[in-house]
Length: 218
Image 1 (spheres, rainbow, N blue to C red):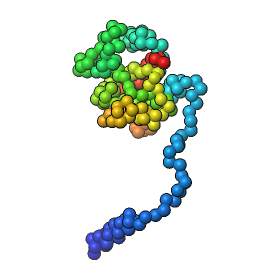
Image 2 (image 1 turned 135 degrees about the vertical axis):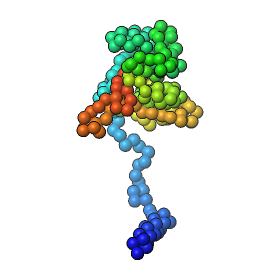
Image 3 (image 1 turned 90 degrees about the horizontal axis):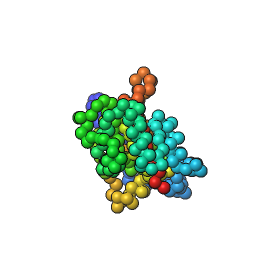
Image 4 (image 1 turned 120 degrees about the vertical axis):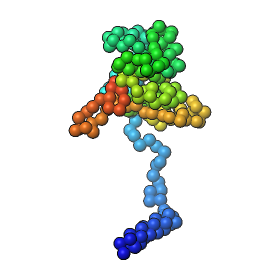
């Protein structure tokens, strides 16, 4: 009897679902605006770069402004010396070309690296509103390139900073001829979790540190 009751109840639910799908109802709010932004405009008076930097720092990331690629190389070299980083790991052709031009050594083989593993990638966009880094498999390669390192460095340019994710996607569609990269990842600060006894743990599922070098190209 219990099995029959369960079957009957299930059939009643499915019948209601079918009827609901077949019956067309009027839109309850026909005049609602579905095209305008739902978020408040961000203050761009000091520049999107400043907004991005402030939000990145709130996310526990670190920000280093560079006037040009030479200054980027100088700051990166100084940081490597300060932290005793002997090697960088990168598979990004753009990053490799800049490092080669400035004489900074790197490796493409993660198995040959010391610890901590310091990886450096480029990115697609920097999202000012959330202080996030948008990476793709087209530019930054496979997910391991930014998830495997203990420390993730990002080489980015001022021209890549956009107000929000919507603008970023529009630009990517244009840049990739309306074909988005198969993998897009939004990185908002270092990997962290507070699931364990509500204690914040950094580097739980990825890098313990995220450092963005922003090179001025505007």
